[in-house]
Length: 264
View (tube, rainbow, N blue to C red):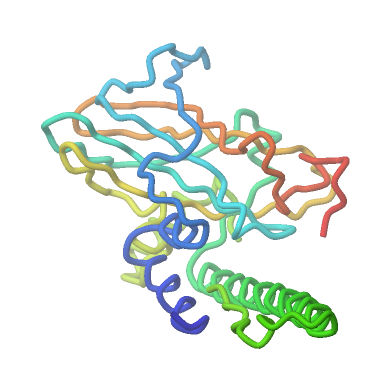
């Protein structure tokens, strides 16, 4: 598959399934559940030891670090439904554990999401091209070395293969305005805030959310997201999902989350 075809496939998957499908195709992952487990929490914030929510859902998630940049982080969230009945998520609100952390996050919407996606795919393509160029230089250098040493297999070496804002508190008001104005949706269908959505029996729903942090006066590291939603089965449910994977530093909030790692 050419690099251009790979970009187009990734772009289409963003709107059909989830951003996670794009990341999975890049890293070669074929699992359904994401790497981090969410735990239900009560009104006081106390975490349950049981991963299953009242509706029976299992929620997992992780940051898609391949899509990270200095000001943007994308999080994949999977809702697994092991039961024999449909579960419909009617509403969705998100937070980060405190008012201070909430204020530090913006949610790109509408054409902003499109612009971010196109720019990120282009950036990744440029990065891959730079990797390919470096590999080519190394391969050619190795070929020259072997040729100088009389290596008869040097001529059989093939070419190097190319690899393929709005504040959280304003979301409800924007959704209301959008409905009244009969305007296009604020978020793609696969977005976490594109509700309602259904989770089939014995299957799952893959969602994603794009977060923006750009205020240098709020250098706190965001490590977990709180999902506050309602279903037609379990009523209101709240879960806390740690989305950063230890040992996998991200470009997003690099200075705050990984102070020993220089931000690019």
